[in-house]
Each structure stands twice: as C-alpha cells, then as structure tokens.
Image 1 (cartoon, rainbow, N blue to C red):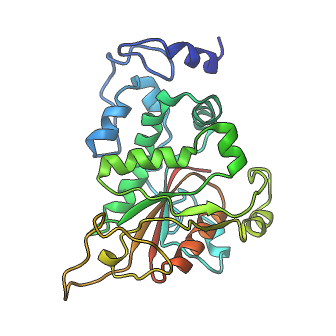
Image 2 (cartoon, rainbow, N blue to C red):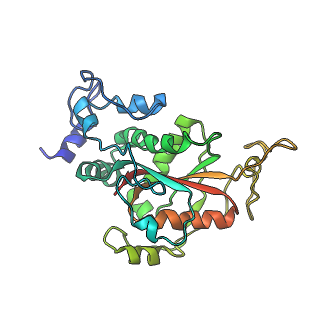
Length: 277
C-alpha cells in the first residue's frame, strides 16, 4: 500500500496510532524533541520513535541571516534585505516533501498539529534571543485561486496554532496583489523579478503598534485589543513574526517584509519557516 493511501486509512483509526506510518506510538524509545513548549511537545509525541527519528531538524546553522545549515550564497548576493533573520525548522528532504504534500494537497488535517509543532522549533530559535519577544504573528498569503482550490492557507493555519501555543496574537496583515506562477521551477533571478509587486497590505488589519512604539500608516486599531504604553515607557520597534512553509531563495520572505516595513516604518521582521530547502 502506498504511503499516502495508508495515511488516508488512518483517519478512522483512534487510539495511539502514529499518523505517519500507522505503528503504535505508545511504545517508543525516548526521542529528542528540540522544542520546549508543552503544546508542540505533546503533538510530536503522537509520532512513533521511527518517524520522529526521520525528521531532519536544523539544529545548527551556517548563515546567521536565513538559518541555512550550509554556507549561503543567496544572502551574500542579496543587496537589499528587509527582514532581520529567518530560521527554518527542518531540511526539505524527500520525506518532508511527502508529509507537507499530504497535508496541503490531500487535506489531511490530522497532520496539522504535527507540522505546527515542527514549525515551533524555528519559532523558539527566533524568540529565545529576544528579551521581550515579538508583538504579532502573521503569515504569507496564498493566491486567491489556490486558496479556493485548496480550501485553506497552510501557512496561516500553522501560524494560528503556533500563536495559540505561545500566547501571541495572530493577525492577517498581507494580501496577494497579483497572481504568480509556482516558484519551484524558476531560477533565482526569475523568482526575484516575479515577486516584485506581488504582495500588498490588507486594508483591514489590527496590529499592536502603540505598545511597540511604531506608528504605522492608515491602519484602523482596536484600543481594547492591545494596551497602549504608559507615559515615559521605553519604546522599541514593532516586531512581526512572519511565517511561511518553505524557504528557498528568500524572495517571498523579503518581498513580504518589504511591504510590511513600508506600512510600519522601522518595524523588525523575523521569519519562521517550516522547512528550508
């Protein structure tokens, strides 16, 4: 039986069954989990030891900008960067491609907590060095046609679950301004050109600007949703955690960050990626 078909069959199975391979996940050896939050740890514990061992965690990095585990030429060639740094949770190998495809294209929602838990490792890598964390989580928007076809935006769904685990607000802040073809088959040069003008700020959004000391442009606010700073309180830039599923050249992340920085001058953008290709 094919792996995807086996996963489909597991949807009706209850108990302690590993969602990836179908083995009993109650009997597993102690497995290393590179995440501290109890929510994602619990989700990862639904996998058996064998499937946990298959996850290609990115635990050490060579590029401090994009978090790539190898020497990175993309960041050296990028003459204008709009995000502070990015971190990816896992390498995008064949197994991870299959896991994500089953979730994205076959709609197996039971995998969502597992994928979000994996993403949480990248989130913690970003949050740990920041003394007072980030102010809001948002995600890269999906093209309208793909959203209608798929029924959901995977980056948004994973972001919302992560936001709940870490007690952070999730806010949609971006929209697709135009349709683009899939980026996976394009060269680096074509990706960079194709991304220009792809994203725009949402007209209706709710962002904790005042508490971060950044005054954005043309944004409606809810005074009850986010507290204003006390008079004389020290201000720092608004910190936005931007989430996407896959990072290849960074063109999507950089373009989204550029749009956010135009709308929120002086803000800091940190990127959390489920996988790094």
